[in-house]
Image (cartoon, rainbow, N blue to C red; front, side, top):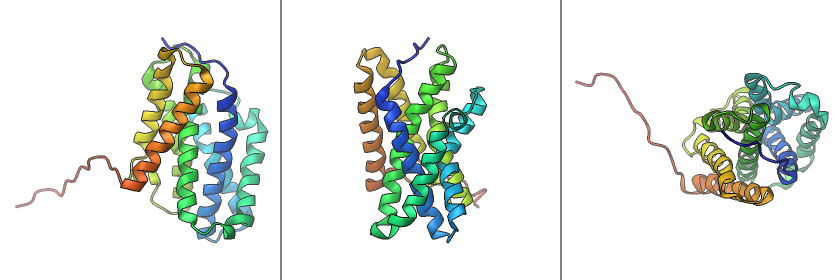
Length: 215
């Protein structure tokens, strides 16, 4: 049985950062597809809030987070639109995209684990971690599909694995009796570093290659 974690002000603040970061990745992706401002705004909201929405539906957690807290919806839309104004100032858009996506992936994974505990403090560890992974990964998958790109989840560098490791560390850290703010920061640093190193050094999971009978 996993005890319900205390309300963590650090995680709450990081959640706002994650919403803005993921909305900005959506805006950058939308710009490559020459979408209009309405499309940028909609894609930003779907990317920032899609993973949490899927998680809430699967866990039966109502009302949905963005329905209960409309500020998340406004923040996602605002961040996406603001990116239109500053995009030309970002000289390395792809690098910014990857960093922002990594930030969103890690923070949303922690937030997803947190919500799973709020739904049922007795949920098995595997369910908590999967809830975190869905929250962290699903929004980016929706963004890439809507932009007709291969989702980052299915590309070479470690992605879902980063979410799983982050979720496991976040969950098991309770047994270490750390201060809630300390383990939140440590998990964020661990997850973000892991993802950025995976991008930098192109760490990959083993591949399964099957080409049928070769005679």
